[in-house]
Image 1 (cartoon, rainbow, N blue to C red):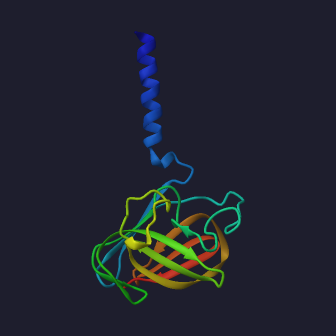
Image 2 (tube, one colour; image 1 turned 30 degrees about the vertical axis):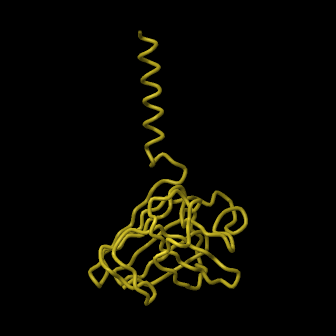
Length: 170
């Protein structure tokens, strides 16, 4: 009886630890801001670390490959009101957020209607709500953990290593 109880407790503790997303190597992070237009914009993502890996070679984003713009589940971009992303309309709602980087430094930002998918494995272009193209840039300082920021002015920035991808939400 005691052995069975100990076994049950160990299995329960293991199951709980697997459900505790904060214990993952790429823990979950959520950033949110109410921008000037009154819309609340949030990004819910898992934040991987470089750990000595080289972006584009050892780890995503890789040129020509759709990237979940984070780790684990797809990154979720949510807006409480209709907004404009880089001047193009995006309806209020939740979207899976993907990035497709090209050799010329352009990055296509993809807002996909299937916000509950795991990574980009089941990504379907037919479910895209919006695609916009921006130039990627380089920051002076390297960032170990992938980080998103949202400014009150609606400037959204993805930073990882020296890679910086910024876009405007209004």
